[in-house]
Amino acid sequence: MRCVTKAAKATITVASTSAAKSAESAKSFALGRARAEGAKAPTAESVRKVVWAGSGKPTLAWETVIGGLQHDGTPSELHVITDATTGAKLFEYQGVHTGTGHSQYSGTVNIGTSLSGSTYQMNDPSRSGNKTYNADTGTLFTDADDVWGNGTTSNAQTAGVDAHYGAQVTWDYYKNVHARNGIRNDGVAAHSRVHYGDGYVNAFWDGDCFCMTYGDGAGNARPLTSIDIGAHEMTHGVTNNTAGLIYSGESGGLNEATSDIFAAAVEFWANNPNDPGDYLVGEKINIYGDGKPLRHMDQPSKDGSSIDYWHSNIGYADVHYSSGPANHWFYLASEGSGAKTVNGVNYDSPTYDDLPVTAIGRDAAMKIWYRALSTYMTSSTDYAGARTATLQAAADLYGLNSATYANAANAWAAINVGPRVVHGVSVTKPSTQYTVVNTAGSLQIQAVSSNPGPLTYTATGLPAGLSINASTGLISGTPTTLGTSSVTVTAKDSTNATGTTTFTWNVVSVITVFENTTDVAIPDKGAAVFSNINVTGLSGNAPSTLKVDVDIRHTFRGDLVIDLVAPDGTPYRLKNSDFYDAVDNLITTYTVNVSGEVANGTWKLKVQDAFSSDTGRINSWKLTF
Image (tube, rainbow, N blue to C red; front, side):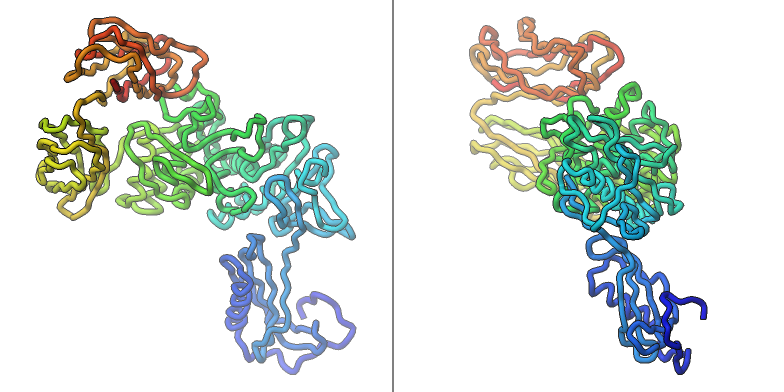
């Protein structure tokens, strides 16, 4: 006899220790039991021959232990005892114990606890002893009945529940998605501390204590213990124990972004109905008291400080703001560009180059980032290096010539890091077209393919009187009917790969909208630059409500001074420089009274960068009379 689980006073004997049923059959039966109970990814961790005396008569049996996750995501240690002669089930029990926690942000949840004597502890042995402490008292949370908190700050355990739950779902995410066994990948759990300070509005990772620490927020009313904040802080530990990204400059921004990226990944993976996954950071904790999140991954500049696109001086920004482009990459890679709704949240993600990004999916994006972090990034990796690392990871996981690789690269190009990669056919989307009825018009479609040979073009929805040249992609003709058409152009290459784009074509009696989409570089603290629009076909003076749509991509729009210059040279100030307007890009519409000016002629947009350290370009601008 090697060991006993529980001593019995009666003599333990069996007729034989030879089993009629094999260990494999016992394993198969136990896996079936786990699946029947809704287990996720069950695995047989051990099978051993035992003598079962729990039901009275000693019986030769197999004890199989099944790991994986229970139906609610709790780790599993399901023990299934089967008769070694008949294969019948004798007994089963779950070795992982959970308490019931009433959290502030995630509802009622199961949390890993343990019993010490007659007292329960926030000590999770199923996750290597993940513990949660009350920093106010310096003690481990304990309880008499294993029901913790009341969902509000009136009970000190509530914040402990949120932190403990966040730590366990983050542990489970890294283990089950990335096969990472703890922050250091050594099976050792970090611990959590809540109620730090008085009205402390922050949370932090401390490598010296190997712990996460959480304040209670303003007025001690909103503890910083939501799922994404917990995952964010734990991921700082993962970063410290993988790439070790230095917390300064571009590497510091990437360090912060890594924590935001995996905070979103964990939140989606946890699939908690009270805190569904999103691409917002800290939306639950309401840190500013205005209901707004800390950060937006789809368009980081929505917070008023974060940066949407990489620029050469981004390393001088606070790391929480310079994280913006990498967060933006993760959103674009996960969901693609443009307007969409995910889990009830509306997003509309722009791109630096105004070209669309096709999603690779969140699962691929987070696996690529993890492999890049754990295999290729180093302490000094900058944005260019992060692109290289993630594309190498994409090649490892999905293939160098895969669509996933190309679209991951295109997500980088969309935040101004590196060029686009074309696999197959790509068709550039034209701007909205305006043509006067019964007047000849034309448009050259631009398309490229990564495959050799000519392209063939087709179009649907063209206004009556227009057609497309199948060989050149030139749309031409004389439209005969007023109206608005949605036009779809398809280009096909020699391998039959296709690309499409859709745009609007307006046939009007008089053109009142004029646009220039040619890029004009804006030099840093340099001379003013101009972009011209030639207006023809109108009569009389310009209106008192001229609409001037401006799309300028710049890394600090507060530097910009902008004028509309009329055909006679009269300037109309649209924007002064503003040191406090410290965000990217200017995409807006101005209404200008220019009724004293003749409509026809050359109108100019004059832009000057008044201060140093930032650059940009006039992307496009438009006049609507």
